Image (cartoon, rainbow, N blue to C red; front, side):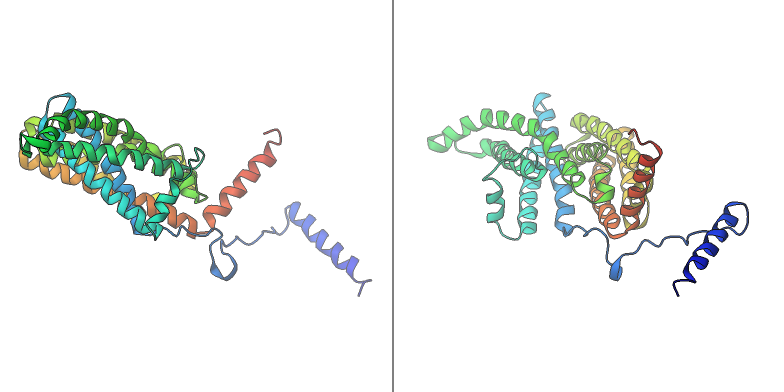
Length: 340
């Protein structure tokens, strides 16, 4: 047996040399991106629909607080009131969704026992804990005119408006961080299509937050008072569409989950609804019906965008090719340029 082995090896080497000189072409069969027992290489996120909904409600709270601040600073009481009430409702829903995902309410409390600036989840917990009371105080201040004028409640009636103004501005200051930290949280994971989009997801989430806040204003107030909402809609749509375009075109293979399957359908619907909502807000500024429909479209667009981004990440974690091919490409680049 051993005497025959050099002849076999030599024969294989001659066939290989013949292929290199133009003979029969030898090729490795195309790789199939599977893993043992059909399991993904990465463990897919264990998050369920509550986290996708949390992405939306957090952005809605942030956008609504910015809308309320705009109404406060321009003397539009209806815009301010709508933004404050929507912000409180959205942040309350966010807290409920987060606690439900954590499984036990005390886990949220445990997150507040430490502060880790390097952990997006820890930072986000503190942002939510600081933003929530400010948004709540601002909303409670809106009921001050309903309180009696005398007694302890009369004192509250006089104290709440200035407290509400300060709290509303504090919530607006925290709103950009609340609206975008979830993008950093997703990008900080090993999920390929989230991780690679670290530079662009904040634009998508910031724009989506602004657009959803604008949707609240367009739905809640007459067109004559909805100027801040229309401006927010235009700014939010621009940021969101810019970020979404970069996510789908800049990432190469890892942008594919954002274009195909359920995530692709959701994101395309989100873009269409965003464009329709902005067009209606700008062109239908004299019609209450058109403004309301435009506001509903912007809110629906934000839901579709957040769920689309969520499902795109899950899809990229489940398919091994989104882990294997980028790694091979990086290795090939390093081999071609050893000095890097």
